[in-house]
Image (cartoon, rainbow, N blue to C red):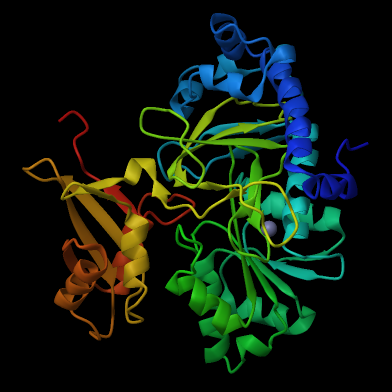
Length: 436
Ligand SMILES: [Zn+2]
């Protein structure tokens, strides 16, 4: 029997913030007690005098942040004693290195399904909805499985279509009339274009909600990016961006207010820290640090996600009182220093969305002589509708930097982005020497 009940969980989210914090504290103490069965955390808690049963949320700040490289270097140190029974082996996408193995127990899968169910409920999705799932359930990918199990737990109908093959997706759309699409924004955009080419009108397909993953659709101030605006307009649908990762075993999904993704209070503790690892004030950007509570296979405490975002605690018009995580503003490892300011590749991608002629884009970065980063933007464009100079000017006007821009045929750009055979196309090539 699952310990997770959605109607109780929904009541909690509408309770006063102090009441929510009480439930979170109980979940945290239980989680820390389980984490203490892991040799790495047992030693760490001992060293820092943390007693799980008596810990307060603020006490966590004494515990050092955990980098994924520590887990990769000594995976045995992270296995609970006694070792739990594993039922599913998930792997990270490996876009920022070697894929990391994340073992799930049966309880973890139940927790994951509940987590996703609550995300869909916050987005107003009900048992009456039908969802076309255009992300994969295989290749040790956890997000597809999470969406699937969350939707079925909710009682909605899932059409497990998987990625790619736009023409086949349209056959499914026309035959089963889904009301919800789940997928990666750029794919959902390409799917709409394919529909138009086939003579269909995406707006009239009956889709009223898009739940997206992998690419941000909003800026830090919650306004939609151009991709977000186009996507919403072309499908005539509401957007719900979701954020999660294989290691954190938890996700957060936007509600209809579109001002951040609600964090599940009984499942996740999020802290935002600056470069020195100190917690920053609400509304300020920093690295997202997660403590996913209730995980049994690979319990983590203060895990560094490498993603940059902000946390918001002001009241949400949707009526849920759980705090919200803003849009992902960039990856820490992809931070670029140009003329004394910090920018992220995502800002370049978003600026280039203004030019419809531009297809996929990737970035190369090298050290320049003055210790700034030298950025080259490689953009796909087949019809010569735009020049390298125009794109460089556009970037200068939007971001006050003028990187070198190279336009290449779409086929060539896509081949370069997929050359390493990863699950996601690579958009950032880092040739910077780390030791200077
Ligand atoms: Zn809300």
